Length: 127
Image (cartoon, rainbow, N blue to C red; front, top):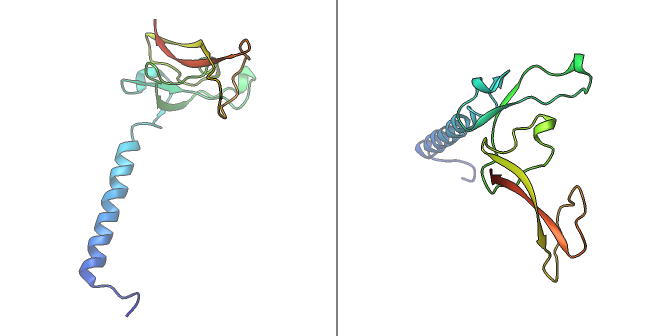
């Protein structure tokens, strides 16, 4: 009897699975929409155009709508010039020097090493 299920159980399982798939697709449908300009994206999103080639004549002209990083969320100092969305309008990506605790754990390497005993905390900050 192993492997045999009651038809109602199988049907309800498939219905549940279909609903979950539909919910996931509808939530992610707005982000990753193809665009050529920020005006084609929803509020809180920008048109992220990433270029594979750094030659002007071969740069990409279309991208996808992606969400901005909100205030106090991590960001990259070079995101905007590399075509990523970065921080929401009215905020800027700022590096703040923070004293390292006595026993630092493993952490991501930062672009520019701070002075000894400190690390950079890079987040979106209100202007």
